[in-house]
Image (cartoon, rainbow, N blue to C red):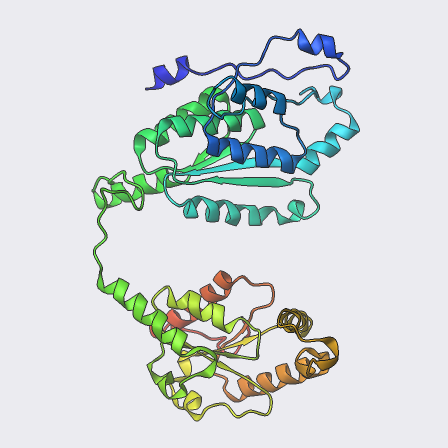
Amino acid sequence: MIACLSSSVPNLPSISNSANQTTSESDSQPQVRKLKRSPQLNRWSRARALRSGRKLDRNRFTQSVVSGKSPSVDFEVRESVSLERDGRSDNDDDLEQTEGKSIYMVSDGTGWTAEHSVNAALGQFEHCLVDRNCAVNTHLFSGIEDIEQLMEIIKQAAKEGAMLVYTLADPSMAESANQACKVWGIPSTDILGPITEAIASHLGVSPSGLPRGASGRNFPLSDEYFRRIEAIEFTIKQDDGALPENLQKADIILTGVSRTGKTPLSIYLAQKGYKVANVPIVMGVALPKSLFEVDPEKVFGLTINPLVLQTIRKARAKSLGFREEIRSNYSEMDYVRQELEFAGRTYAQNPIWPVIEVTGKAIEETAAVVLRLYHDRKNRCLMPRISKRY
């Protein structure tokens, strides 16, 4: 396969070293080898070209359709700047910074693993992503199941100077991607391969080589599946303080003022198989007695920065169509602070409840804190800072 791949590799289009060529000179240049592409990849590439400011050669596209060819766009590299640093102008540097570099994520499944791995890694570069010094464009290609599709994407990655990150369960597909990236000089990372090999070695069992959802894989309805369904149904019924008499049946109870993310956090945890109830804290409204009768190690308090909470509540009121003159004190700063102070006093009276600061945290991050504390308590691990905010 490697020999065939190497022999079929086209020459990558060369980049012109002169920015002042005339039209006649450009016409006399040899034509760049055309790459025939699938309609789906054409749409992806056209979208990327429009976002980055590059223009497509629509004449070529029209000619290809009129001539009866498949509806594939013949792409060619349009950069007119030199790769040599001395040949670049200030405007070229600005353009490069604005467009950013591309990361292609390729998967034979949904691409969830590749996408989340890349996003987690990009979190380490926020210091330069924010000021656009190292702008990045990510593109996900999911459901890639044959070599032809894979090679089309890798060829486009080579043209754009993109990095390739892939999760391919089929070893032959992964090896093809690896060899093609080596031939074309594309930086690449195999996310799934190394960990799969390590687990196979540890278990002494060969992997199936089939992606999730493949026809050769069977997923019987296990006890865990039914447990998750039950947890989701329970959590939906217990939303926003409903049915307080059922709090005893919950695995986790979330409490906090309005708009601290109790409901989405509850649903996220329920999808992992935990029965979650959430109880709102409203100033002047007594909390249900059952909240104080359950095991206090089940209860978790949520808090948030008042300025952030006010912004969220204003947006919520606006989305509901409330006019400015009829809006209540729901989003007024004085009321927001008073309600948070009221919640704080409730937490202080129940020091066993951990208080989790959700400001600036994604749902996944807050859920990770909740589950760590939940399992620490369940396993009776030492928790010397139980009353600290997390």
